[in-house]
Image (cartoon, rainbow over all chains, first blue to last red):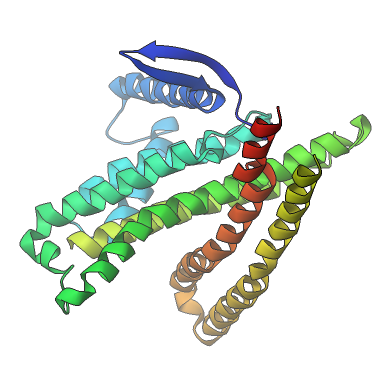
Length: 224
Length: 90
């Protein structure tokens, strides 16, 4: 399970597109999250002004995350909390996905680099949108000779974000693959629960929190 | 065949050396945790903020340790020189 399996090669407009295990697992996670979202949305027709039951828990989750986003980034940038919640749910689902024996999509550098690239583009575009030329001039501070240093510092941010998440998820996958490959059958029930809890659930949840918090810090540093 | 065995063995030794930066990672992270625990002991009301800052600091310090792990994994499992030599031999 250390190599990503290839399920087929499509040919779209002259480019060959590989359908790998990562792509299929991402589709499964997307399907689960979209179905949950549709169920909550259909249930929203019968919501009352004074919440009870399931409506209470959904509203409290959204309120906790919204307070957290506006607390970190300020009221002006609070509207980006929607994307951070979606990224949080995606990375957390992918971390819990590897408990079921399937390879997590974030254990592939392509997925995490895509997510980090979106954070980097958000930081750049929101910086230009909210601070205009002041943001672009901050690259030349305090002197023009500092421009390569500032540029490399900015480009190192998505690289380190993506490698942090990728390294943690991949090391969990490797340790559990080695355990299942070396142990006889009767000790593959029960003891892996501890390893799964530690490496997949705890480290996965911690890394999603770190990803979202550091992305929020970058956006707040460049646009506020 | 002899050169392929030499290259693979040197790659394994390189992977082991690449993980030696875990020593510094451990000391860095322990300093962060010690400062966080002392700060919570001095002012227990701010323990939530201190805990958040501690987690962010731990993740930042862990990043360079993960770079070493990444190099070790590439050496062991996706070594370009080994792949090139296998292509040459077959």
